[in-house]
Image (cartoon, rainbow, N blue to C red):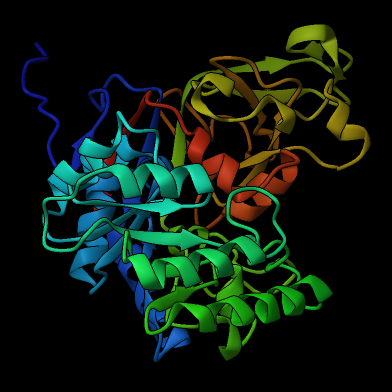
Length: 392
């Protein structure tokens, strides 16, 4: 009799018991570390941080953070203070910046208690941080975010220059980093890139001898003038293509697979899945896999019955038995149908695994089939997968 008490998640495993999960994720921390080292070589002599917001793009900030630390990373970026607090438990000596700013006076003590550095991008952020009494060695350390074209967070250039002049006299806060964010970094020829780097350089000179940071993953491939002192790669660390239309130099970090729960035969002319949106053109062997949009396998990747298919064709596919196997009909909440006819009769049985993302199904191709970007695919992966970490 199976002993169901033996499975105990640890640093190398998380999520449901692998015998009970409908899907599994394998996260290669060795490949992640190799990606970091490649980016370090690309940015040299600038330093390279690790962007681990959104639970390291859905892959586990504690495990990813430790792997990056082992590869030499010492500076990290999160989006929310709660993410920073969790990361601090895993990395007690790391420098951790919180990108979304300071969440009001009531939040300031948490930043101090956990040694989180807020990225200040508004006058209200600055005023709040100035008013908070800091008991540490550095008076109210922070980063200053200047907007050079995104029109999202950040001081306008004239506001940043006025602040630099005033703070040089008052020393009310201690900027450690000046940063901005590229709008079109993944389009190397876009004129916005040059306008932003020039705007950033004009503000940078007012802040004296502190580090400055502009390049995200894509920006690291635009040329040395974009690197400044600190690069902030995110998606490239996790295996996503940093620049659209260019060969991807990054190693695959994530392999996502779904368990086959049934194999059935459907006849030519029959329909499959909700809405009867796809009518079969041949007798078809169908593998039903235990994965769906509740697991982040997006409904927009369906082979039929979704608006995207009138624009982008074909839909999503998996990989099994050495061949790509297309999705059939609509992807549903918990189940997805795959056409495995070309593998031959009896080639697929319940309990087999279909690769959804991995070396055979590149992350960016999966995203394209769903009409989105690799960032959304990774951050949508649900908690129902058994997760295994290798290469630590």
